[in-house]
Length: 336
Image 1: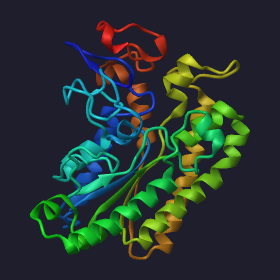
Image 2: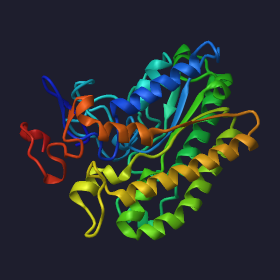
Image 3: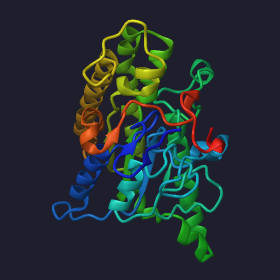
Image 4: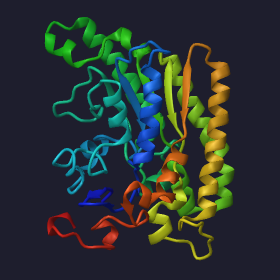
């Protein structure tokens, strides 16, 4: 399970496995969000449309493939909430900071409310289109290109329904057509593209694939721009060499760890991906003249949390959650 557990004194448990909700990362996001809605901007964000993987999935996988089990959700929601976390994700804190409700997953058919946006992120998804090899390795078929198709359909059907609406319920639960261009479009993806490559190929092959992956990402941003998106919030990827799935459970035979126990070369791959992603964002700024593209350095925030875990109040930052992969038993047997 991907979660933190609160005990008296200190937080105990992993910082993230497939998704990250570190205090430092959240702090970076909230500071940036404050700038976004502060006096210098003087703007109001009426909605958020989110795309990505488990770092920001609030219910897509739960709706499509079965409910995310407990103890996920126990700390904040008191029950499973569709998130691979015991509490809120960064996207939740961002929505709160902007004065918006938590995003409903696009695929969730039970009491969704899309008045202030929708979430298309799906745990295990990639930027690259999912082929048989990716799907066979356990990755989600709802890759970024599929999420964009879902958004396009959502926008078209929302506009039709809103314009033809005769009941107040529809207008109270759907976004205003004019607000699509005023919304914030958030993207947090790429981690699973690197993960897949490291599980299935070599580091050299993963490095060689990065330009193609970031090209696909840029195409996705351009498609959203063509659909009317103007304000983009883009996260880089975290230090994948610190993922417990690599650093603890599935360590390569020959590797060099850094001072925090993370696989150094894997983190260097993440840094290379982030460098090329940042270059793409800067290129897009010159091409999309009416867009605002905000690049958020999540890597540094998460790595700071790892390197300063004790100072932040955490114990064993690379440890597993109870019940995950059979590494440790949970106190409550129903969680295993």
